[in-house]
Length: 216
Ligand SMILES: [Fe+2]
Image (cartoon, rainbow, N blue to C red):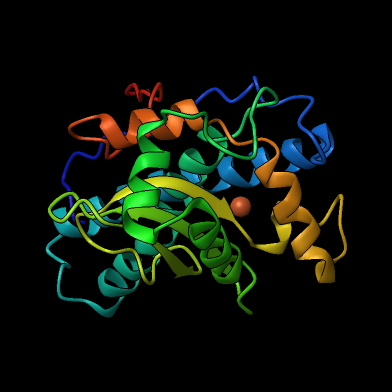
């Protein structure tokens, strides 16, 4: 994404993420620090790309590499915002009865349990990445997707509803690398389904609710 005058991103406020079930404050603190790194690197890459573009170096290998790196850093920043945004110490494993997300899941998967089995199965795939529940806004179908690293596998134009980080850094303070399933249990006890519902029902839910960015 070449821009000549990029507007810097800055971290959203996730100070509410304390006292989660099964995820320690220390774990969240470390993870928020990594999130900040993606913001810093996204801003740095955007500046470097803009400089090269202004210098007429848009066809250089360096320009191409910076753009490839941007896909990793930018999606790392955004996916973390969805992830932290759908966690709350007041969260719950399952949406309330009457939740539009629950209704959409049941329409697509036949039952909550079928969706849950699929989500957990994708979440325990080997590799480094994410599992994301999306809605195709055209068909209104719900689907769970594996995202490799941060940038490979995101379905263009779909709405992210529920985002779970399964990089080891998301749970390494509290769990062993082999205990990803325990981490997923903890994640499920902290889901803010109201936020997920808002993402589903918002006409243009392309960014986490409540997150705003201001030029520095
Ligand atoms: Fe992460």
